[in-house]
View 1: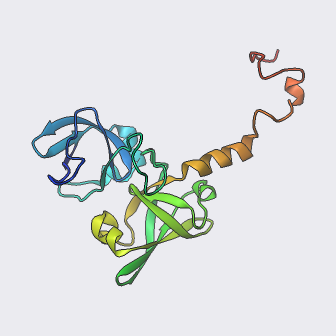
View 2 (view 1 turned 30 degrees about the horizontal axis):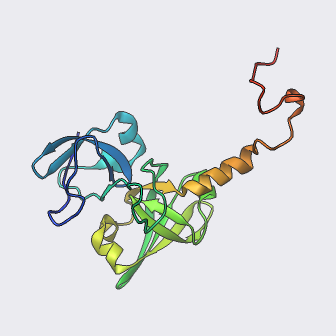
View 3 (view 1 turned 90 degrees about the horizontal axis):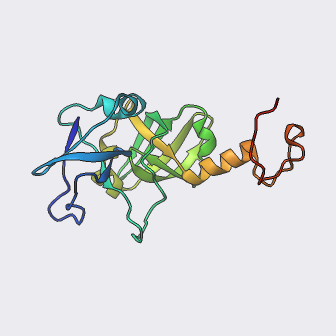
Length: 200
C-alpha cells in the first residue's frame, strides 16, 4: 500500500475520487482509499519490481499527476503512465539556475529516444538534449527543479522512464512491417480478410 498526500487545497485537481487514476513518479495507479488529505494506492509485485516505487520509504517525496481528461489542454507529450524501464542518474552538472542531467538507459530503449524528442522521467515530460547508445541528457529549467523531485535527485538515484509513444509505434512498424506489405511465401495467396490458420 502506498499512501500519499492529496493535492493542495488551491489545486483544481483536489476533487479526487475513489477509482481515479493518479501517476506517482510516472507510474499510473488507482486510488483505493481516501482519508482526509491522504490518498492510498495498491501496487503489485510486478509494479514494485519494474519501477522505483519499491524503493519508497516513509516521508519519500514523489511526483503526483492526475490523468489527462479528454478536451484538456496538453502542454507536453502523451504520457500513458506505463513505465518502460528504470534508468539511473549518472551525471549532474548544476549551472544555476539550470541543471544538466545525464541518465543511463537499458537496451533496447535508447532506440526509442531521439534528440529534441520527448521522454518521461519520473512522470515529468522532458525534451531530450542528447542521446547515445546507453544514455540521454536533459536540461532542467528552474521551475522543473523547484516543482518536481528532479531538483533533489543525486547521482546514483534510480528513475522511472517512459519513452515516447510515437517512437514505439514507429519502431514496431519498422521492425515488423505493416499490413500493406506483400504476403510472405508462407502466406502466399492469403488476403487481409482471410482468417489466419496454422500451417500444416
